[in-house]
Image (cartoon, rainbow, N blue to C red; front, top):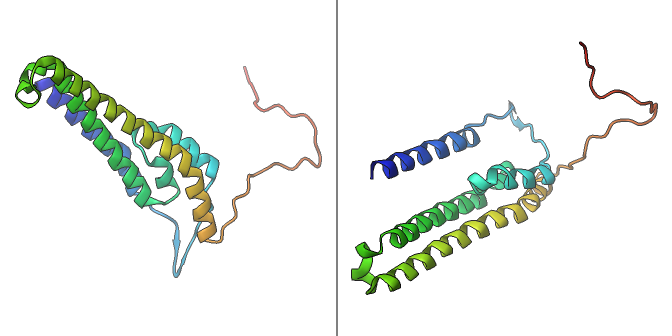
Length: 167
């Protein structure tokens, strides 16, 4: 029981450490004007894939679509709770026989709950990946911004070394 409490506390601290920088970002503000930078749809998708696995909605937080980001994060929390309850029922079916009858029925119900949580987790993550790029594009449209990939000039093309090595 102590291990579960410690692991739950560590998960909460870890999620706070991850989410704190998202909500405490300061932006460059000029009096009466805000400096807005266009959002990169590809970067939004990459953020949804990488850090989005740990906390769903990061791609939407980058795109400043906080409602969808919080919705996806909420579905992740619900899915993790469902996975935990399903695991608890599956691991100790004797404690839940008063709810479902014999241990086989309870264990089957626990497995269904566990896999439902895993499915909800996966669906939330895939939704974040699928919609993050579009959220960045929508942000750019709403704020009349145009995202352009920075490209180097190839007028005077000559081969250059990418790195200088000095020994």
